[in-house]
Image 1 (cartoon, helix red, strand yellow):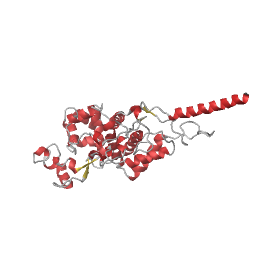
Image 2 (cartoon, rainbow, N blue to C red):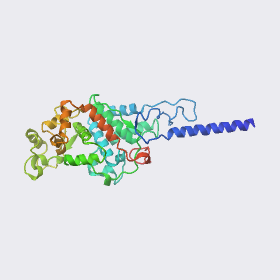
Image 3 (tube, rainbow, N blue to C red):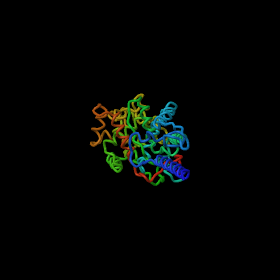
Length: 347
């Protein structure tokens, strides 16, 4: 009887231990929070303090530091990765929320939509994902990796000045359709842009802060060529663009060309690869490249915010980070998603 009792106790202990490991593996991803992955990632394939079936303690993995290390490596070899990641996150979050649906491959996935054909950064996100999968599989979502990687790239490109905490706990979406992609056009009016951002719960001021990401962006000539030669079918350049800039851009974007060449959205000398407020300062000089950029300074609703950012009344380094957190909080997937094993396909 004692032997049977001991056996039953041993079996129960094993069952309870298994349930404990399973409960740790079944993290709640319902609400975003700072430090979500603290004490959730342990090397050896388990999320508990001990490796399953072993008395050896598992090694805790610093998820955010792992992400930062990979981003730093990429940034050192290509500093334009910050613009790529900012665009990747915006294009992901603005469609079906921040669910990494843009990463999914397929003949009709979001990747195939015209606005996404020039999006970059997929390889870096997958590299980070696989580095984390090797340490704690099935724990860190691709959606969270996008947010963390973008945050780290922004910090590096601002020389450590722009700092913000990324909330994590997202799940990866299961659906990705090109037909869902409806991103604001660079030629829309400020009023139309405000309406588009409002649908995502983002205020006009936060819209202005987020467009500050153009400080490290580029644009193909095709997106603004009309401002150089035939603005609104006038046969003349856009009168709101600095004439010196018009002549400079005409050299880079000849009339009748394919429009495939690119120019920096931030025309500030030496600032095109630095995350700073130079982009807004250029708007005051009538040197906005895209129509929507220049109109931020001209529109009554957004002019004061632009001016405040340029004269220091509002701190761009703080406001941009706060707006990025709000962008990252657009969640639609909720508990219906999954933690993908590979970012480019569902499990």
